[in-house]
Image 1 (cartoon, rainbow, N blue to C red):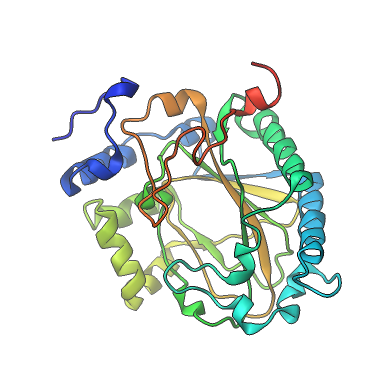
Image 2: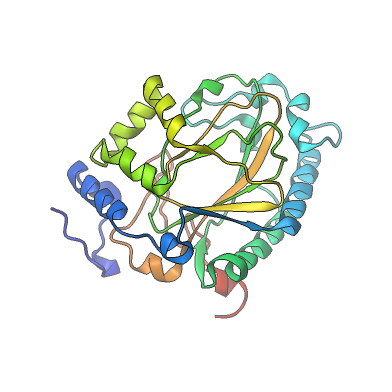
Length: 299
């Protein structure tokens, strides 16, 4: 049985735990009431953020032109009409297409909007200092793209090494139209589903990728996300979710992970991504070196 410590110097790296220890930790995570549930008494909530949706949308359009990715301005939901097949095609292993990689770097103007958005989240959502992604994740999903069968791929970020204290914030930058092709389960359904695998994330993810019958079962347990442009969705990081192939329009969205400073201090282990980059979920690594309050100059 793993001994959980609270002294930062004594914390173990999540990737150094045995499979059994990881499963025991996951069981404890799902057995307890999360900080998100304590705050909102729900698995997910929506709030209005229209000014930021407008600003981000305009910034993405500007960057597409400045990066010479499109010849002329076009509604973002029609972006696929301007892109070559190779720009839209997904890498089957990670579900990322080439057009999205062009937004790993933005510019100072975009980042200023992002920092203003972080300040807004402290005032309107979390009401206390939190750590936040140094670089927001900009996702561009196009219809009829090669390797679209990468999706659905049900998962939780915790299964890939993220801290369970994180809050997922998702902001659509295109209209709902015939759907965002994004599905989400409640924590209760997620808990029951993962319990069938004894909280072995690797076994669960393997089924989600390779077992189509199981994937269709997950479709029945999840609900389509219907968050309108101008609103954001915040959800408990323990919720199982997935993207789906799009059919008729491009969906552009921003997602970020934030974690209250006080909750981060209570983490049981040091978390690190299990992917190629093995990113550390620490300030100065995945998270910005400043927290939301320090960003506002209110140290």
